[in-house]
Image (cartoon, rainbow, N blue to C red; front, side):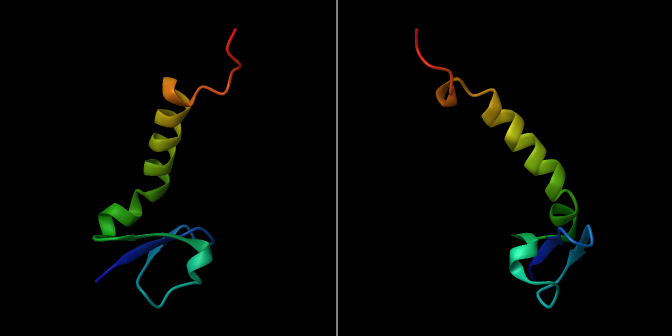
Length: 59
């Protein structure tokens, strides 16, 4: 079974939850889905600090 994190309700849902456009996932476990927003934050911080993705113009 797969699980999603609902962005409207801030809750873990199964396949019959809200529309897919309002969810993150799928995840293999409820625990993974429950920390979806934490994972998004971690990835954003990694990308923001990745020197290969520096948006500043070269001098």
